[in-house]
Length: 329
Image (cartoon, rainbow, N blue to C red; front, top):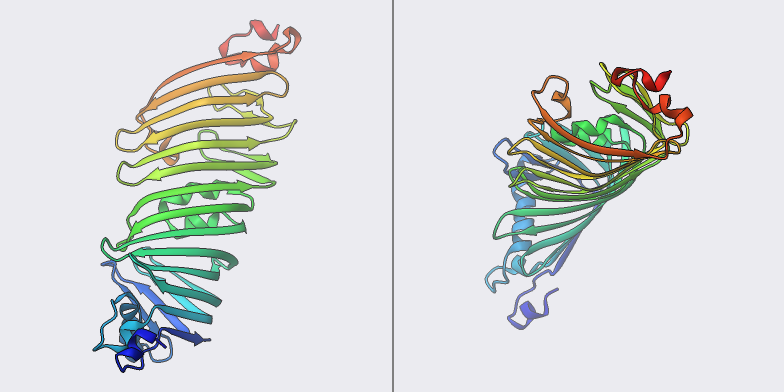
């Protein structure tokens, strides 16, 4: 109970705990959020929203519920229905904790979602800024299929290329209408397969990958701060036609950025271990519209690189026949 309210002669709860409820959280095509209890949703929707509104409200001596500062949901079954994404998920035994702070709400949630038939566990922290209607969400996870993320957002579809378990942290700032304003990610994965799209279409066994970067929604800018791929000492990459050369490749690391508004891809600090010899390179690609369009896009490419440590009697392993046959004689 609230001591401040008692001084004023009111019995006012400071916290409420709900045990084992079945809840539905929905977002309609306009971006509006709805919350209700599954059993009597028509009657409970307003009640659930009133609880959240009271949690956001400043204390008012004429409204005992306005002294509420904490709401906890224990062992809940929650259905998430997102009409904007056309997706629906169910989480079992979810634990959610919300409390009011100076700018809105902060909370934590432990969720286990059934996404595309796969049980996936998440540990989540959430901040809601009332004045700007902005959500900031941080998600921690381990042993998660990348297909989970591509199921959540179409823009993350290229992650399906990673057929391996991922762990890491993703932080997203977004408006209530679903527009991502900013995102940070730090991901790493173990042994699996990297399925490359055309024109590099092939499946590469990998020992591990790591990816760290930032996305700025307003600028449509994607910064790759760090990307590493470990293919092992016997790894290789088949270069597409007309080159058609199988290049030894033990590992690859790079940094770069993609400027979506201008269709410009800048790749810097490319370092490749070619199974003994090493290569360094950089590239600038204009007219790049995304990996899915790389085979048909009208692009201009400025590529610079060097290779060192190649023995003369091994030159044919690294020099494509399409570039001339002298190295293969």
